Length: 165
Image 1 (spheres, rainbow, N blue to C red):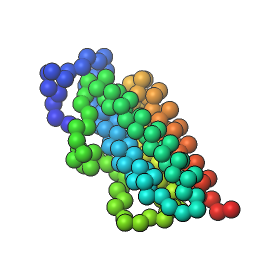
Image 2: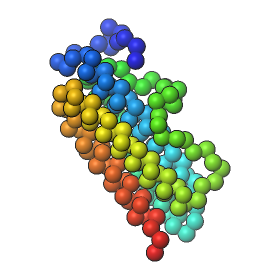
Image 3: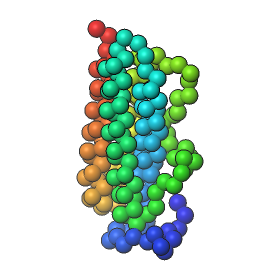
Image 4: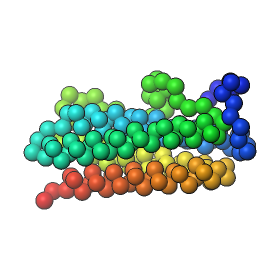
């Protein structure tokens, strides 16, 4: 991240070297949230098969939850005195969740891929938690627990929805 423009300087009692590591971890998680959001919407739009309605609605609910956390993550970065993502290019440079540009993905494969991606997001949130704890950033450390729980819940629902009867 480049030095902060004085116009974007945000006061914080946390040491700047500590908040930089937290901001970097938050920005990586934010990039993955955007990648996961778009993939979830892609699969929502391209769902087919006998469970179409159930899966279509599940993925719509999950995508809304994922996009809903993005503002909180970005605002947490700003509250720590840092800057956040600025573009699709910035997201693509930081994301660890792979895009899926396949012309067709079967419903079972969609659910399995999204489950694994949500678990990758959990890993990213754990990195945020570790960085926040090291920086004594109690606010970030506390709020990331809820984000982790939601990602774990999404992975669980995707697993259960894809079980064979």
